[in-house]
Amino acid sequence: MVTRLFVFDLDGTLVDSQRDIADAANAVLEQCGCAPHSEAAIAGMVGEGAALLMARAFAAAGAPAPPDALPRFLRVYGERLLLHTRPYPGIPALLEALSAHGVLAVLTNKPIAATRELLDGLGLAPYFGPRVLGGDGPLPRKPDPSGLQALMSAERHQPHETLM
Image 1 (cartoon, rainbow, N blue to C red):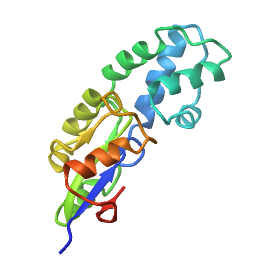
Image 2: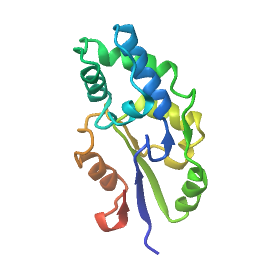
Image 3: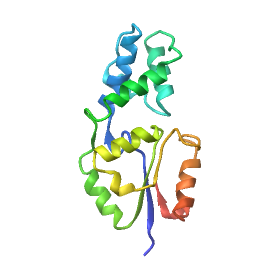
């Protein structure tokens, strides 16, 4: 039987982190005198990392992002990482079932420390072991294929054996 490499994104795929991300982004906006956005509006700004999220949030507020917007967001978000974030229903059972057919990995643009804290705090870390790549490592962030290629190489899987 051919084993597979199953590679997952984190936010919006394995876990529903929308509220914690939106609350953190809005906290930074409010610290800078801007009005907050709806949770749905912030969710629509997510993608390609926190720096771009903050740039989009400030642009939508009609204000320039301060130079320290990203470190502020990361600090505030780090303080509320697990307040509301939960695995989507059925995710633990899915991971358990898939682990019988291959190895599982996470490839995310979220910083690795926050990623590990989330996986540990939600009881998902054992499914992935060391096969977790964050957006602040030496490889370019998604959508660049380098992270996926590195995971495939490390696990000795070919593209036809890999599902993302």
